[in-house]
Length: 330
Image (tube, rainbow, N blue to C red; front, top):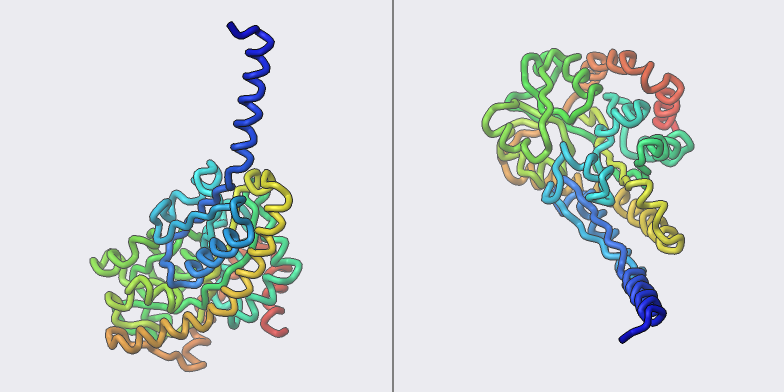
C-alpha cells in the first residue's frame, strides 16, 4: 500500500506535470470577422495568422473565421466580452455604445481620402481613441483601412433629392441613421450578411459600402446603380479582450504587437489597390452603372449632410472634429 506521504508526493508531481503540459500548449486566438477573405479585412486576418504562427511556433495558434461563420454583426461584441472569441475587426461604426467619441469616423464628408484618415489615426488623438474603451474591457490594437464609401441604389443617385423616400441599409450607428435622414431617406439597420438578400427582395432599396465589399458580396448583381461619392469612411479597429490580452506572456504579447503593426501597414498599403480592382471588376460585369458626381453635385451632398456634424458635436467633441479636419490639410 502507498503511504500517505507517497500519495501526496505523487499527487503533487501529477499536478506539476499537468501544469507543464498546459504551459506548453499554444495560446489559441480566435479571430472572427463578417466579410470575405478577399477583402482588406480578410487579407489582414490571414496575414496575421501566418506571421504569428511562423514567429511564435508552438506558442500561438490563430483560427480565422470569415463571413460571419462564427459570430455575426449582432453577436460578435458580446462574444468578445465573454471570451468566446479573442480578436475582432469591427467597423468603427460599431463602437458608439462603448465610446461616443469614436462616432467621429461616421461623420459624412469628414475625410477627403484615406491618406487624411491615416494622418489623423496615427496622430495623438487617433491613438487615444484606441484606448478609449479599456474601461469596458476592450483594447484597440490597430486601425485597418477598407476604403471610402460609395452609394448604391435601385435608381440613379446624382443629387440628394434622388435619395428621398428610399430605404437604405445602414450599420447600427446613430450617426449613419441621421446621415440618411438628412437627405430624407429611410435608414434600416441590417446585418452585413443579410444585405444581399435585403436588396434582392426589396426590403431595402440601397446601401453604402466600399468597392471591395460590394464586389466580394456580389451586391452589384442586385443594385443597378452605384454612385462614386467617397462620402465617408469604412475602417475597422482590430480589438481584443483587455483581460485576455494583458494575461498573455509578455514576450508573446510583445511579438504579437509587432506583427500587428506590420500587418496593419501592409493592409493599409493594399486597401486602395484592392478597392480599385474591385471597382474595375464591377464595371467589367456590366451589371451596374457607376455614376460620377460633378464637383457641384458632390457639394450638394456635402451641404445636405453637414447638419449631422453639429448634431453629434457634443458627444464627439468640437476639438476632436477640428483635429480630424486638419488632417485634410496636412
